[in-house]
Length: 350
Ligand SMILES: *Cc1c(COP(=O)(O)O)cnc(C)c1O
Image (cartoon, rainbow, N blue to C red; front, side):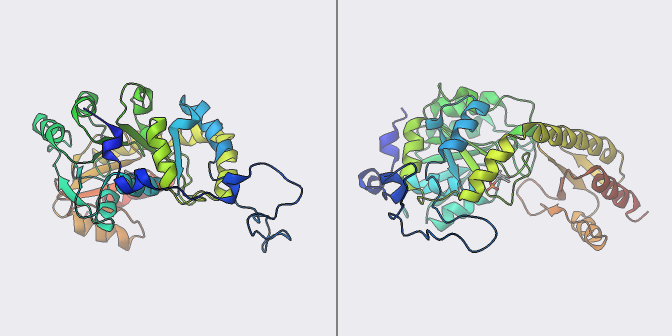
């Protein structure tokens, strides 16, 4: 049985959150002398002299519409990486509790666990990067505080089968964090559509990929209002800057541009898939629901990696990741970049 209160660290349940000036007074007053801001203005070209809304109400109102959720089901962080760290800290007592990950997967889960002195248990994915029935059974029987499921998975690119994810959601007593950083490129509905069914579900998304805003640092977590309430309780009060909030509102209003880029990247992925499948040194090309492709190279992926670097093309070498021997991860770029990549690979040792 899932019971949120028993998963939350006792010190966090008991603590009082920081009450900021912007919590205690909201709105516009004629004279704002409550937050030790600089009423004269800002150095630099733009005015950022006031603290931002700690609850990011304007951004959440727009996002709630876009995603079909309530504002109370949204947490915003300084990248999804902040949400990952806060989820570990919310549930795991340092030196005592543990979390589950399914390698090969995103590296930040392990970093967050190590940073917080939280033990990590690795349950490997199958050779085609899915959850084996034994893995599901192992998770369901575990007393770990949370499990990270990355779908579409980084660095492999595939969606996890929905039935297996659902079995975990039904059986596991901890939080099930489904990291959907690449959801915009996937041909499957987001797990945000299932939030009402699963009180233990947390879905992570980000503005860093399809929205093209990696430099802005804005990540989203979607979950029950109870879970979101706890994340808000422990976040740094002003974790999303005014510049980020303003820029995100402008980006959300520019949704047609987002959609046009998304379609172009999907077309680029398809083109790369076709081309790479006819390149001699590509031994295996994995299916992708993301904006990158994982490919296995023969005879020596690291030599190919170095060769590409020599041509000014940098890709991600994943050869040392579990189950990924001989692989490179190739991000879909502009059409011209994709062509350069394919041409270089065709020329390799030719
Ligand atoms: C890129 C990526 C993120 C995004 O992190 P941000 O901090 O939002 O930039 C999260 N999870 C996975 C699996 C990723 O690949």
